Length: 157
Image 1: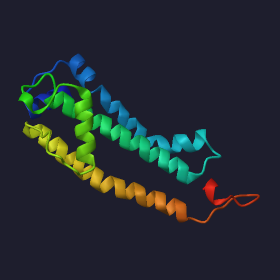
Image 2: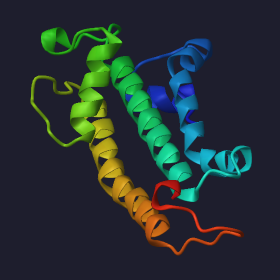
Image 3: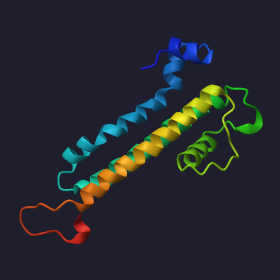
Image 4: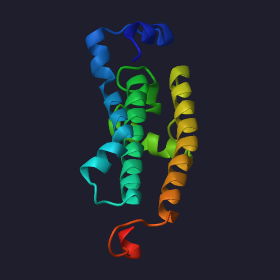
């Protein structure tokens, strides 16, 4: 995990360790990325394609929340970014959705270089990661169904 000293070296802001843990607590959402094996064990009778869809939705949600939280921390109420951003978290969640969908309306834009770098990294991750997860889902959907007993209908895949 990134230390508070590393954060200070990068951004120039000094932050106490307790404030650091409170400020970056939203990184816990990244735990949702490894949830596919847990879902398979918890729901053994659910098809792999449905588990993959649930895992994709949870991972996209966690990525949106982490990116919005990080942008809120960098550009939000503790910064002097001006009227560009409001200090409310829903505005940053909206910014995350617009950024991840690569629509980019232009109503919000990061003002600090660190925030711009975070936005660039987030765009690259989403543009590479979503097609990979979608290809995994397609591979599961076209895979031959193996089941002991009667064959499932199309709706049970």
